[in-house]
Length: 328
Image 1 (cartoon, rainbow, N blue to C red):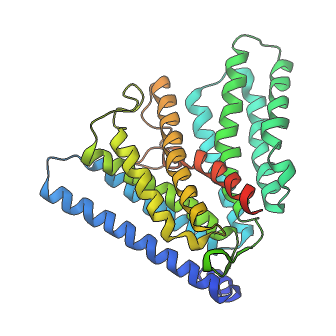
Image 2: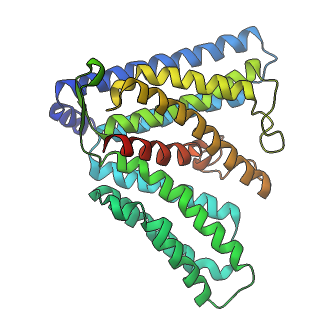
């Protein structure tokens, strides 16, 4: 791996190297600051339960490291790794929801859609990438279920399987497509740089993870007014607003990773802050409906993979199309 990273860096131009180094420095500074803050907070107020906050921060460390590696490694490794992430998340979600015995064949076809979707991202076939799951699989899965001949519970199975495929495969596959985007030059507002999808991938992943931590932190410190008490009692307006504003401010300082203007970067940060919250509470509502705390036990002590990336299922596709519409 070390040799691959060095070879990749040797092929990068000077500006790209500077961009990567800058963002790594910023990420480390913010995560270290957050970790030290929680440590001091725990010492000063030992009665405060910071277990979940520490868990979210540790998850942020892991996710950021993984995606920095994804940026530096060869695409032949990165794309299968991201497809595996979708595979695990999809498996966790459909196992949690539960399906009929006759749905095993449609579920098999849903699994086969994962490598197809990521291959379309790999070759950059945008026109088919954006409709393969929302149109082709959306129409195919009900037909396959009908062929099985069992109509009892078929509507629930259709809706659950299609939604699971959309959220864990279609949504997350946009992370891979960032790496297939061509380099974009932005000379506006005095900027002069060239950056491809690697910077955009780091931008959306880092802001999504830090937004999750910041919203929880602001909620712990100032939270009084609950947003959805029946869905996620810990979510407050103070935490949401504080997290979104903090994420928006941070986005401005790492905007050099993107081909966006300053105003577009700030708007993108705001969008990530809001949509990350939406992804979190939607998954919380599903878990509450089913009666489980976590989507799985893939990560000992931290629940499932989907628990750690639920916000990305919303931020990745929405931010991707925001950037694609403006730049590409």
